[in-house]
Amino acid sequence: MVTCIEDLPIEIWLLIFSYFEAHDLFRAFTNLNNYFHQLLTSNHLWYNIQFKKKNYSNIYCSSNIILNRIISLQWIAKPQYGYLPQFLHKNISNFIRLQSLKIEIYPRQISLICKILPELHSLKNLSIKSDKIQALLIETVFILPSLYLCELISSSAMSNIECILNGQSNIEILYLTNISIVIQSTTNSFFDYLPNLRKCDICGSVKTFKSLSFWISNEILMFERIPKLKLKCNSNRITFVFFEQFQFIMSIIKCFSLHIYVDIQDEILLERLINDWWIFIEQIEKINISIRISKRINQEKFTIYENMLLSKINQLKKDSQIQWIQRECPIYQFIAEINTEE
Image 1 (spheres, rainbow, N blue to C red):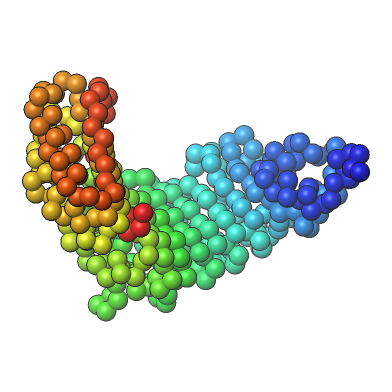
Image 2 (spheres, rainbow, N blue to C red):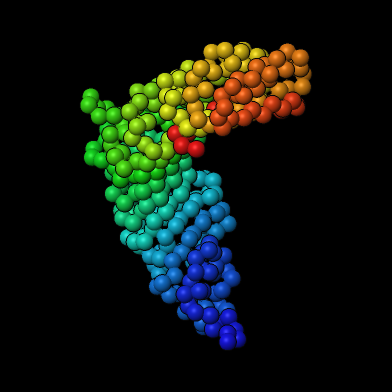
């Protein structure tokens, strides 16, 4: 019978420790006793590190014994407080097990990051956020042989990024926010360089969605290549771009979600939704429409729209629903999302 916690198998303790962030782990178990000291210094224990404003210079990350057992590194402080690119560059030879990296950087740090990434030979998951994603970063990321999941986030709205890609990427899951990519090639498209891609999520604001949707519309064959594709337009004002640019793919979409917070000026959107776009929407297998009406709008008039939509949904005889709510909306939004799988 186990009489004290030290009698638990080492494997159990290693499993428990794997759920701790490294700073919290050391804070809880350092100097407890010799048994836990041996556990913390065991080569079988790998670390998940989160850099914050309060601990980014913590002594626990200064030892090579610690660095070569880090498998996940996450920067969650604001870039101006940190030195993670410099820290990575200085200790690059010690990150032999690093599999996951999440970081927010300034555009001026991109060139340094592009020198670092090819040296992280075990890197599988990468997430980079910056005010402006540059072509150099995309070209570097897509040639990393071990990379499985990639997330690139531009804080500001961007137009198409022109890139030159050499060779094919091994990326299987790709997330892009406010980014569309144009390849400088007369024969290959962007997705020709990602033969293993099986999931792609693309999100754009109203400012970037015109260029983003143009990019997608020129990559029509990708819908046949990628099993899971999600496109999302999120705006604080109404937009027709989503429907106008994506009518041609509606027939292959499995799930469609539309969320509208309706202001008085958005009456035309409901009219077009019912009269112009419904012929495309009804081709989709699963439809979810959520509409919130401002209380200051004439309820009688919008009840007509509600009844018309409900009637159309009932005629479909498929997995579809409408939520129509009247309440005060502090922010008016348009969120349209399509998925090739439910």
